[in-house]
Length: 354
Length: 271
Image (cartoon, rainbow over all chains, first blue to last red; front, side, top):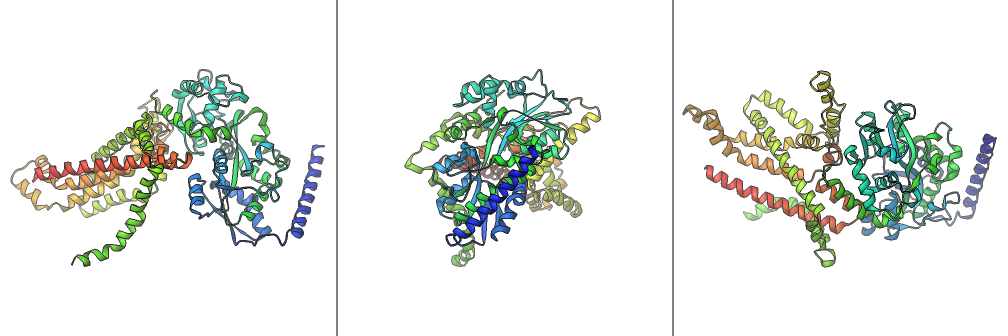
């Protein structure tokens, strides 16, 4: 039954896609701006770049005959410098969630052309006029499953704070985002009442866990490595990094409860050389089948909600979109306003002895 | 004469002006954006930033001290031993210098971890029962930074010791001076310039350290470069980042000037 529906959908969307291509081909052939020799896409690099090439860039190159040049890393400061100086090297760049909101407000971005990029299958929260939501990721608990056997791992942030029942070295990110929320949830604040963040309450709760955090991590690969080396037995981290080592056979498990969801974002810098073709690239990123390819590689699904239908059933349990209702969304809007204050309070708290 | 001396240096001077002096002046301009000193007041008035400045200097001083402690004997030995052993010494000093700091930092993570090479060896030999915390703390940062910066101490000291005329210590020994007296009254004053050059290099480089404290300190060891980077890339508060950098620059110059005055008077006293 399910399979049949899936097939029909697949066939329909393929037909739809073909029809759309045909339509744009005939109606807008003259309106299309000339093709540039290359399109520069800036992203975080590493395995993400490899997966993007496989899922999106190769197809784009074949379809339009435009070479995709990849650069990295993602750098908000550099984006601002480029736009300010009028020398914009990127046609499209990945950008952090709250940075994207601020960049849109600071007039650093081009609006997304909704005629080119179809976001009708996207959740309403992912329709920002300047920001394209390319994927979902979540900060969740990773644990050593040779230490926490048969589902005996912590299953909530209250459990995570309970060092008697769940002993062992822990690692959390050296950053206010996620941790403030986790502390409030552990302290009993409901998931939908987190914002605006009560700093005093959050830091008071964080005081309790501080002596038990062996490592405050700063790069995304650290928590996975720390679990592999058994430096710690519990670590918060981004789901794709844990998925990667689990795929390779590491004795590590993921607990999805109360994870902190965020969207990966792409945007077109203001003054980009080929904005039309950057929009075309976003259209490519919005194709559910291609998003499914990307998700299977990295564990970061796209926000075109249809893409889950095209994912291998074995991969589905590792995708955060399969557990949306157990988790909560980090508020990029709140951080865009309060991020600096939060960072200052966080640094001061880290410097406190004890 | 003066014209001939000046002209060949012109390209280098232009390079320095365009790629060094101009950006520094531009940065100072940033810090005064809006014509106020507010960002300086924040950098020097808030406890958080003063604490981090202090931490940074403390770490830089300790790193310089340990580099000197290890680097002087090594540099001395390399300068006075046979050419063969001097070459071996050079290989050991220079090879790490050509390796990326990131690689070396990760190597220390493998060695110092709870289940790292050192702790495992100690526990298997029965010397300790629990792993000694050597990583993700102050100790880890010190070890990593001393390792990265040691060559900058060894090389100037090596150069200074090489310049000492071997006839002088030989004469002193012939006149019955003890080896300690030879070191104290001949080598030490004559190599003071090398010690000074090495110490200033190590100290100044330590002040700007970023990767090593972030990875080996477990997030607990905060240095000013980390905060400046946060302001540049995350908060996008460039005026404040520029003010913090300017304060760091002034402190650095002050230390440099103090050290130079100190070594000059020492050298004169020794003469």
